Image (cartoon, rainbow, N blue to C red; front, side, top):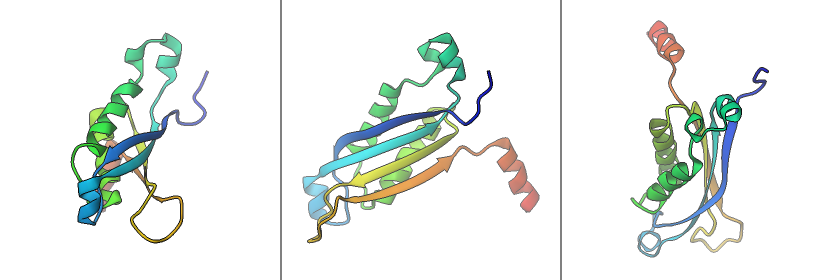
Length: 137
């Protein structure tokens, strides 16, 4: 059997309490945050072996994200999303690409909407990328 599209592991609507925002009150009081991850990883070996060591433990990924969201404080949602992507790619070499969506459900403005989401995608730099970069110089 051949892989037709890249495999994906998705963690949906993880909820955390974090102290992020431009305003001091946001960083003092904190609020609920929602994080979605869409990770590109080859899952074929795990599917065939039925062994956790051939995959990525999504509970570990969850707790990595939790420590970021509930740990350090960021002013911008963009910075929080960037840190999550960096941590996931650095901590799990099998992940080739990470799409991170961070939603702030209740921005502190007198407007009514379901929140604001930053959606970023970052990929591991491959040897081909390095060679292409050297060719561009």
